[in-house]
Image (cartoon, rainbow, N blue to C red; front, side, top):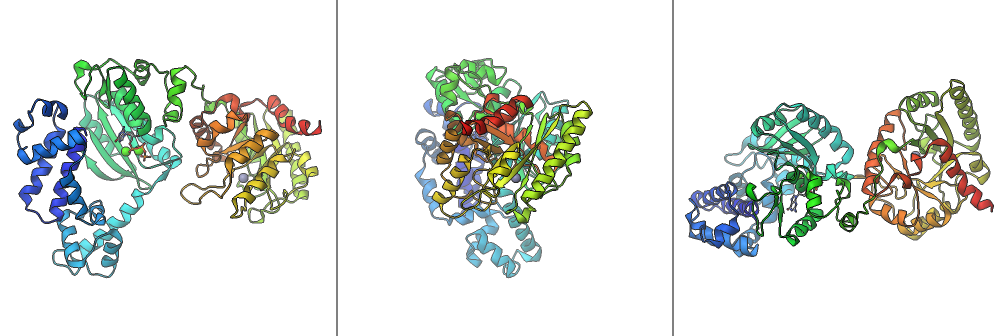
Length: 585
Ligand code: DGT
Ligand code: CA
Ligand code: CA
Ligand code: ZN
């Protein structure tokens, strides 16, 4: 264990002792020792090796023994026994704002409360207010704290995190004391669902930057604030952490706090293999843990760190220990797609089904965005709750789209609407006949009402892929992140069927979907399956999902060549014709 981890254990021991009602001097000694350790400039390993722990003020014999055990073995039986002697739920109560060890001890002893649920029930029954030293006000505050905790402990959509983090990042960038700053953590890695937001800045005036951060608009409350780091809760209940480091440390801290943990572990091992040490403070010419600037290799960017470890630069999205090291060693990392490579979206809705905007509105908006094409794929008739179109209305819409395209062409513009459908995959057939599908330029097939049987769902999707008029499968698993589990389906079997039939698979970039999942794209492309990054837009604003979708596609190792809607219109039309031509042969 390093000293921060040891300090954390000591702090926790202090709290546990307080919960047990130990005398305050003893409990405070642990908290003090923890603080002392955090302030040390030398690694604990060195102090122990040279037998100098005892020379540090406030660290007596008993503490020396415990610290040594933690550093050398990573374990401390005393701590483990202490922890086991207290209900786990009590420790969790400590995270509720306004509840300290003393109050928790009283609740435990007098009301037999040992977890959040029991505490909530006791508050609602008015039992907490009746206790000596509590009262109505405290009880109300505890209930508020429980609600708050529940909200921010949750996980959040990437899109929501970006929406609150990016403005703050922009403000930080504009602050005169900020030299460099960046997102870090899972948000920088573009995980579809995130725990908290991590921000990193470099500055010679960290305290000023921290003050600025904690007073940003959108900060609901400040959970922790020190000289170089702070945690706040933002609108929507998302926690954000900012760390401020020196500019020399910035690249190392950025690499460290970007993670993932799994990726970091391999990076650290590679450093050790080269007789170096890598941590959040630097890459050091040292065989043991250190943060001594004199031993630090001069890396000015993350690129330099990777180079020192004989690796090509690994983009943040790929830092999941899913093959990036093998590829980066051999110079075989893919050149990832950029969102500006995308020329349009092939799965979108209009007010003809459940979309918001009219066809002329959509035309104007997407043309103005600089896109080359936009497919209208409204729902088919079985999706009656989404106002799905029957065959007659599809043909009527087709006429309207032709007329709009003629207008666009007459005005000398190259932008085009593409006529399509999102046809429902029913139990034993598609919602439209092949004759109608053959009249449409773009056909997306989606399973909207799945059954509970995996084999059956899989069979339905495979049959859809086998239809020569179906270009692509939409949102393959139907998942809604943080809301609805994917339906049961053998995804690799469906991918194999798409490979066999020349069917594309959508990466639906609605922020609750990102379906097909990024973890499966390496498999899909290895089979030769192409991706289509689709907005599934129901409003014009949803065109912005393309940027998110491209980020998630990068996470799936996708290149421009893997993605159909990077093609300009003439080439796209050729590709759209390919599967149909193949079935005629
Ligand atoms: P999240 O917030 O749950 O979505 O995921 P992350 O990856 O943002 O995780 P977080 O916020 O706990 O920490 C940010 C990064 O800091 C993480 O990706 C890697 C680094 N990190 C944090 N704790 C550790 C650790 O104990 N060991 C290592 N190697 N890295 C860590
Ligand atoms: Ca995080
Ligand atoms: Ca964090
Ligand atoms: Zn749709």
